[in-house]
Image 1 (cartoon, rainbow, N blue to C red):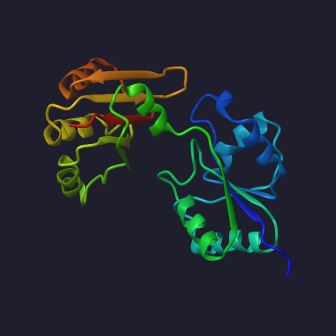
Image 2: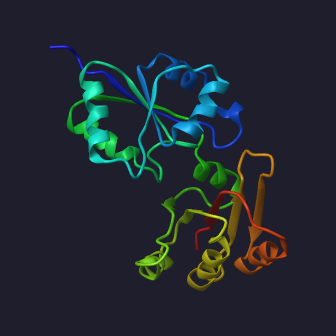
Length: 225
């Protein structure tokens, strides 16, 4: 019986292309197939590094049949690399489903570590790092208040992701549920307009209100109690 192939979970840059590792480039060139969150977005990265490996899409809206197709490729003895639009696959994206299925099918999984926006923001935040929890994106409607009430009693440092059109609302919510705690907001980490705002919720909210427009990808770090 032909041995199964290997599934590689490959981290890619979150902005600055120089943050990719030599090992990541080598792996992406050598695998048989690259599963991308968005083939167009990843295509820019792959072209930049001269990676001509066949690619296919795999994202939140992919049907179950796509997961089965990737598993069948691995069962044929071929290797597959999974990449997200930016950062480490499996963090707030569907790669964990493929990983879980690979484990169930006894397929070897190899992590190729690299950039992660949440950890990048944490290590420059000045917040306490001995204990922290990554919460990703909050629910936008149903379950949002319940989640905030649950987290309000959490004493460790908290990390969240947020989009530009919800950042102010989320900070206002946090001000209510995490009074007195320090907050750090990272914007466009590793990119040209990288910015970090630190202070109380009131201070950071005021800084955002001064801006003519709010753009970019955001990481919010709330220091522990």
